Amino acid sequence: GENVEQHPSTLSVQEGDSAVIKCTYSDSASNYFPWYKQELGKRPQLIIDIRSNVGEKKDQRIAVTLNKTAKHFSLHITETQPEDSAVYFCAASTGFQKLVFGTGTRLLVSP
Amino acid sequence: NAGVTQTPKFQVLKTGQSMTLQCAQDMNHEYMSWYRQDPGMGLRLIHYSVGAGITDQGEVPNGYNVSRSTTEDFPLRLLLAAPSQTSVYFCASRKRTGNYEQYFGPGTRLTVT
Image (cartoon, rainbow over all chains, first blue to last red; front, top):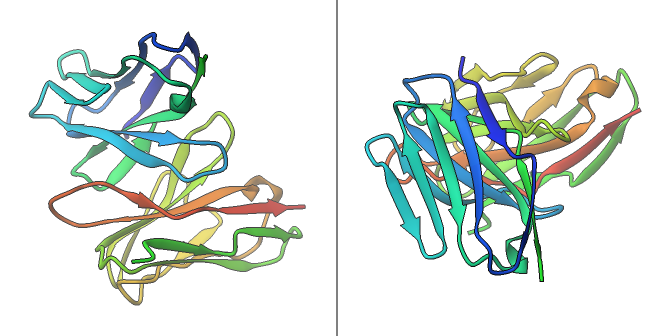
């Protein structure tokens, strides 16, 4: 089955810096890659996703890149703000049904 | 729309007891899933359903049962609770086609003593 690895487990940056979180997946048939943000005590919420027919997608300060050959995808957050502090999860699925999640990255943005 | 709702928010069980976690959605989503979240392990899929009357196992199905008699409801049953089932449980739903965003419920924090 699919296996998703996520790095780093924690990431500390200064406000205004960029943050990059990386994930690798094992199943070359995976075709959908969402990223979720989870604030303390809250539910996960989708922030951006990408499908396998696209190499990059951007939404304001957030971007995701996908390298199908290397089987890895990354989340890029530019101009980080304290409200970006949260746990971020990547995930992968085949056929858009069963999502397999990474273990999460705790991002701390210091003012 | 209320979105995805879960009850209860908190529950404490003794080992061997049984209970049902409730999940409902009012968005007419075909797909529904149950996940458990443990520290350092992300979210792991327990069971999922692609429509009323159809369920399938995820990564960690042992100790849990589900059924899907209506589009709206997807209850998760713990038959003989064990301390290893202490976790936060999230229900999620999404449409079968088009936008594949999964919408999560607020979660149920379960402690088994």
